[in-house]
Length: 96
Image (cartoon, rainbow, N blue to C red; front, side):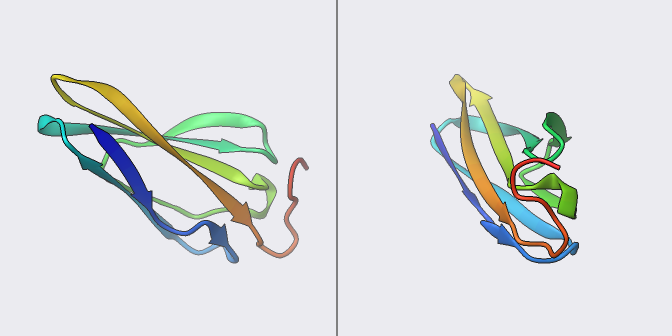
């Protein structure tokens, strides 16, 4: 089983953005889990359990990392990481 993620890799405003996990392979129903790591704040949080996740990035997040974890019956959990550049005015790149 594999998973890819579609969605922006650069954000420029505090508007909602959506990322979607696209699994292939596996058997039956897929289970999803999303985590968000923000370099500006320096912590990881779970942010979703659906195929897609919508977030409203903040300037103090800095560059952030979204990870989609997907599992299916009979398959090991797989994940895909997306690093998102934060270009929101007034923000910080690595740490605040």
